[in-house]
Image (cartoon, rainbow, N blue to C red; front, side, top):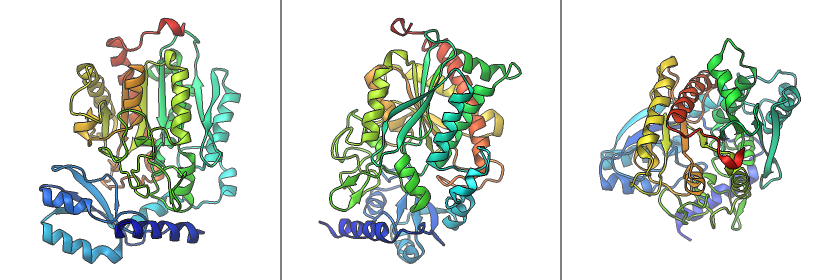
Length: 434
């Protein structure tokens, strides 16, 4: 085993043993680096990454890309020397990562949460989110709880079906928080569920969505990883399955059986890396169970949406090739309408386009798999990474006061997305679903 791999394995072991308290990121800085030459790309790819080391928010993959890298204080001088040697342009984005994490209160005792009414000014644990979903089923006749399997550690994979006109409405599936550290995605998903269920005649556009779409919304796919990111390592991305003797987790959004390959573009074959694609496609119980459920309701689905953070983007197939989907013109129309509506409320700017050319080349992602398997559009949101009011960059670590503005603008965009999809003929109820 290479020294880089050995070191990373050792650090993961140490973390697993000593993590009785959440890992702290005091004086860890985040820099945005611009890749302008092959030498710079190769240098950045060679950095040792993982807990207690450098951490990429997005992996360096191509010239022209900008990536954000977390730099521990004890590696700052090494990082500065590397930057000088390679002439990489950098910009300081976050002065102290721990300051942002402290705003999230991830260590808030569950006993305190029990005394609160569920809302959208805090991030809740899995148990609280699940209890809220069950309470929605009790309150609303049109809500049915869906259990699409269990996680590696035995937690339920829960979603809700909101269906006011069975057999009459086109279906939209929303998958959220497949990546553990992207907390704002599940918080936004639950807010959207609540808005759909409580919309009145005074909110006709939202009520139209609730009345005329058959919704399948799963706020929290990767519950194991989410709990680990809450209690131990805030930037954990993967699942928590055992890999080899020591490493844990697979990137669940590199694990779907669509042009999957170990170590393929946008993924890694080193089982300790955060974008490890797994030993095989659908190796993870979370992705396998969810995919089986999606196939079981495939005749009811017209559109698939994945919630991620944080790159200010709306993406669609493909990720594995620069060749566009045959439906590229229609997908661009839908994305343009959605992004324009999203911008209107708070001025948030999104870019949009195919995964491959808009963010980076990658394989094994859920939205591509759905497009490939069911032939329906598969869109991926990368939520905002900046407070549009203050200009503060926060990346994955969105303060709780960002939940509402993010969710509001995303719902605005969903209204426009559905309207344009209807106009283009994507919202016709399938005969087999009647």
